[in-house]
Amino acid sequence: MRFLITGASGLYGSKLAELATRKGYVVFSGYSQDQPSHGVALKFDVSNREQVDGAFEKASPEVVVHAATLTDVDKCETNKELAWKINVDGTRNVAQAARKHQAFLVYVSTDYVFDGAKGLYKETDAPNPINYYGLTKLKAEELVASVVGEYCIARPSVIYGASPAAGKVNFVLWLLSKLRKNEQARIVTDQWISPTLNTSLADMTLEVAERKLTGIYHLSGVTRISRYEFTEKIAETFNLDPDLIVPSTSAEMAWAAKRPRDSSLDTSKAQQMLRNKPLQIHEALEQLKHELSPP
Image (cartoon, rainbow, N blue to C red; front, side):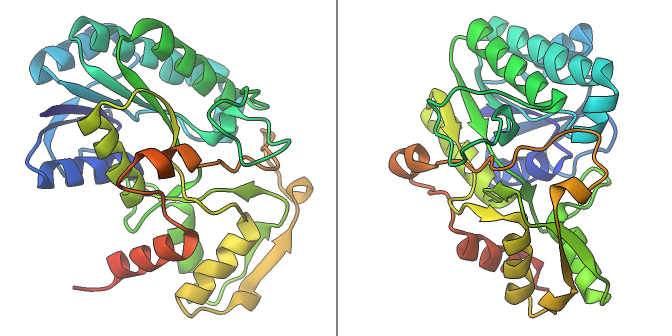
């Protein structure tokens, strides 16, 4: 099977490229800045239609995983033109190219399409984003559904993993660094999420692609947990001092964009349909600990 992955130098895309390559698939790894470490590197800008078409001509993909996105929630709020260009126009270009090449498209969306009023959202719940990032991702979902013949929309929540990617350190690596230096970390107590290990998300995505599962799937971790409780679990797993974690509230944070109070996802559909099941938080953190252990 031939894969084209956009955003293949990111936290999720790089892990997906690694696992797909390991399974013997032909992988073309799309990127715009940081060169990917797995697959055949293809440099192109998703917001440039000609470059996207050129990448598809080279890759001739059977499966496209569109993970390239502007994920900085505050930057999306303060630079809406850039957010729309990458997240919406970019998705339109990829979706149209996927239709032209009759490729199966997996679009990686987000829990932030929901307003956070109730939590444990199912795939059938109506999205209602409260920030511009969530709005652009919802518009992109709608584009995919209207343009592509065969597609899957995958929604994770707070992706983390063992390696820095695309020059950025994810939340868990940031926290581990702080705690190991005996530095305090201010963490909000009033936000609930479904943290998603990148390895688990990549495993589930590969199965979706191999089986051509269509529609919307919540591919996050199983556990609904507050950000504060999540950091406590991390400290416990890695035998670090939980007293360094300072409770805070969303109101105290200097954010440009609103965050959903409870954007946790219900993964019942994925648990029922997939052989690679979503992970409980303790399973995911133990796997992370194993991945971070020296060989």
